[in-house]
Length: 329
Image (cartoon, rainbow, N blue to C red; front, side):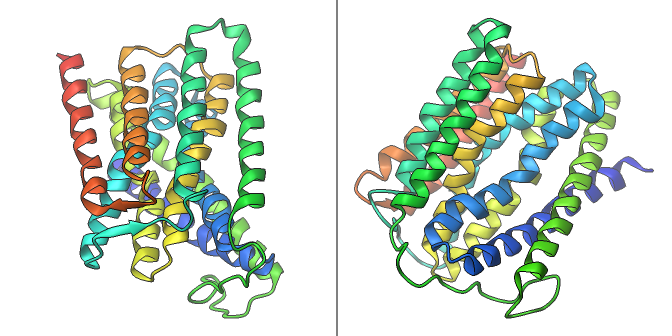
């Protein structure tokens, strides 16, 4: 099968399946009477975080070669980098498109800032384990999963509006064109979309592997630049759509919740199935992702974020490209 068909086909399948998965998860949250904050930060975020989770898993289990390991680490570290920089940049551009000068946070006690604080702590712990013996990595992975479970419980307990009516999803359940679906239909769509995510991740990794076989370029660099662009599209595009519909809670929670998941559960997978002894380029990627999250946490301290500050997150990504170019030369 031609390389372009494998790579583009996998990318398209990932994006479409993630859209159906997120739509199903949103309906599932509605039917389960879970408030919008938790739906955005947990259900929708976990759904759209699945592609970047499945890509490293596919790379490390479907393959197992050194290039596959590099692709896996690139996907693990590249996804947080993309969200904390280009992700917030696109949200800032989305605010410009609707002529909204600032993003008012749904609740200063939770949402964006709480997810960002968790990201900074959990991601720092994950990276710190690279300096510890290999025997300790499984313990670190378990600790990260437990921390995420505690964070998720806190989200469900502290998200405002838990006692209020849950907003009905806009539009129908995609697969069945049903505006009042039953749970069985919602679960069926989620299952079909999950299968699509798995297959899309598999094809996408196969395409990347073919590229690394033809081009003499760092497999990690290819993975950290190419893979996240495809796998982060669901979070970014969904957030922009939700912003245009005035659903800021879902828009913010989708990105920040995915960041929390990627800072804990996804690195935990990497700590179990890879060497998790990060090189200088890998540590640099992690450090810039951490700086990007710290920047957004700082500019959101007043309970709102100016769109120019979100757009400025793109400068951090440009800085990453500059630093990485220097490392390669």
